[in-house]
Length: 207
Ligand SMILES: Cc1cc2nc3c(=O)[nH]c(=O)nc-3n(C[C@H](O)[C@H](O)[C@H](O)COP(=O)(O)O)c2cc1C
Image (cartoon, rainbow, N blue to C red; front, side, top):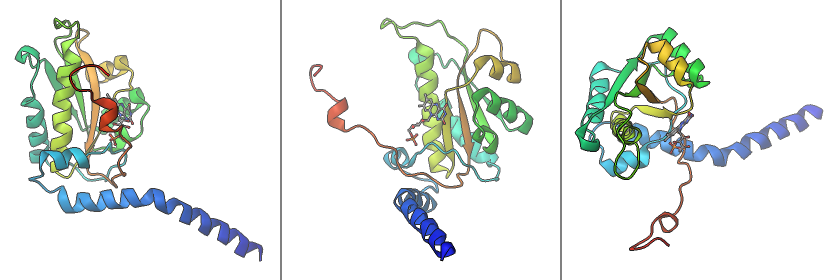
């Protein structure tokens, strides 16, 4: 009797997870169907997710090269291209990066692209620093190209820069903008909520 009661509790709990799992199931399935090259930009934008669970499967060199190439072709202020991307595959080094970022999935991903800025003092007339924008655009290009290649990424912006620099021998005058994990997703989560267009767009004047 008691066992039946326990089992019905477990069953109820399992059933309660189903609504949350459906979006992940649909996303994972649609990746299997669509993320195989020749994806439209809008499809890649819609399919991209932050992937925090990776398969134990290496990334092919050719695919990595295409993703880096997508970053290389990104626009930058005054065409400065003040970026440098360090591709880390060594497990010990990934361990150090994971410690610096307090995130285990940084080790689970077979590759981490450490996106750095080599010119960090260029201030635009608007008063904005150029390098965070420039490096971010290049990294975003990579995240979208990765979707087309059937690969997942996650931006990691929370990290101890000093520890990352130590691990990779990065010079003092260089800034580390982000760590981008890269690999085959174990599963693809459903979409996170976004604000409605009406909330974030104004026409002609601030409103
Ligand atoms: C600049 C930036 C920094 C981020 N830093 C982290 C991070 O340190 N750790 C993490 O797990 N996700 C990080 N993310 C991922 C966001 O949490 C994620 O993009 C957001 O929740 C929306 O989910 P989605 O990417 O699946 O659409 C970061 C994203 C951006 C753009």
